[in-house]
Amino acid sequence: MAKLTAFEEKMVRDALVPLKNWKPFPPAADRSAWDRLLAALQIRRRSDYLCGMADGALGRAWPPLPAALYMDFAREGIRTTYQEPCFERRHRLAVLALAECFDGRGRYLDEVLNGLWAILEESTWCAPAHLGAPLPDPDLPAVDLFACETAATVSLASYLLAERLDGLSPVIRRRIRREVMARVVEPVAERDDFWWLKGRNNWTPWCAGNILLAAFCLEDDAIRLSRLTWKLMQAVDRFIAGYGPDGGCDEGPGYWGMAGGALLVFLELLDSRTGGKISIWSDPLIREMGRFIATVHLDGPWFFNFGDGPAQAHPPLGATWRYGERVGLEEMKSVAWEVACGGNPERGLPVNRPVHSLYRELQDLFWVPADAHPAAADRPQARWLSDLQILVARETSRPGQGLVLAAKAGHNDASHNHNDIGQFVIWLDGEPVIVDVGVETYTRKTFSSERYSLWTIRSSSHNVPLINGIEQVAGRQHSARDVRAEFGDRSASLSMDLAGAYPGSANLVEARREVRLDRRPAGAVRIRDRIETRRGPLTVAVPLFSPAEISEDGTGRIRFRTARGAACLEYDTSRLTARIDTVELSDRNLRSCWGPRLMRVTLEVRSSESSVSYEFAVSPAANSAGLSAQA
Image: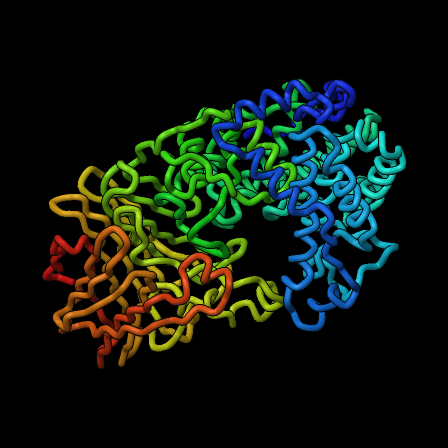
């Protein structure tokens, strides 16, 4: 595996391009560059949208951030009350700065100044949930994800609008530099107590990339800059080293944009500031870390969302596109475009896409060709991530057609872990049939000792067996055993023993699960479970969640109606009983993905013996999957 630290610090120092010669994006003063972009963007009309939003922001008060609001997390455990107005400030600044770049006449400059001033006056840029105290200590700067993002945002605004801001007053950019250096850059350069420097999860590339961008925009001392860059390179090397050869992100696709996508941003910054001299694009692991997001893409806006993440993930368009270019994977560019277009690539990008951040918007504008219009590409019929133990299998390679199955084995100690060994999802003709619920809006409980009291994180809210009322438990030792993935032209399957995922009190001898997609003679997904305990009696329940309309006929067939068609669940009524109920969703995150409710089908078997076996199958409603005699 290639390492960034194979390039010695002196090599980095010698390779760094002087700040005056570094142009990651054209500044607003380069009118010809922005005019060319404006002409090209008439296809997408992004400039009209951005300027329209900026017009609506002129003269509006900036959201207040009082101390009592900051303390709301410590008092109530709620993150959004402070984060939403805090993020609104940054999003509005991004819109105004971009509008000024497009317009170039100073119309938005005073409001940009107001936004910068408000952010620079904040007592901290760290989110309350990451602080560990009710209020920030001014003598100990806290450097979290959002402090790093804020540093990058105000530094990039300073870079883009340098001449215009200096025309108002040279004090502005000096103040930006002082605050960014004191709050973020210098603490990271001088201290080693930030846990994310150890490379454990997405925090490392996310923080490192934003810090590097801020420093690259503001610092021109080659020695100081190379030392900081080298330190961040070491941290990112530790992050990369935590990945297996399959490049799988154990945090799931919802976090890939801040993990693999953030890694792309960090590597891109190194590449651009050193004129391509510091680069590891050719490393096979870097390629596979990018490919992951295409592997777990199911259809349209949908992904296999294990762990803390929604089924509708939003990998950043520009970063995913550029990643695909750098490592030669057209499928990444295709997925990035399809998702950004809301699952309708032929329609192109919607005019009113939200602005997430200043840096991300610039990536979309300058890293994706203005005339880009790739069609949805054919997909591999099966992919197996051997380190994460994830299988994605398709009935056909054509997007939006046929059955898609995704299933996982693994262990119950992943980053953003859910207790979900044996979980599977099923899509038909691009629509969800059996789904992973996801996670509710983060609160204080989410990352505390109470995490596994939250219903969406427990195994009882995943379609894994509930054995005599006993659920799976968390921990690296609670893992799948005897995992086997097999795939060919006719079928693809994943089998495993789930027994290790459960506590000793379950008295399990074996909990064998096989999930199989049959392509021929007729498409169907089959799930076969065999549970054996040391003594009876035995009750096993399997919950299946779906956003579809559900009906049953009492003969072992349950119908799932989706927007494009229907699927049928078949089960043996002599072995299994089925119960259907509605799960009302009040959480905003869940409702944004699934709507106001999900349906739950619970299949249950009861036996006086110490072992049970059963099978159920899902197929297009026009087919009859049939159940095997030996199930």
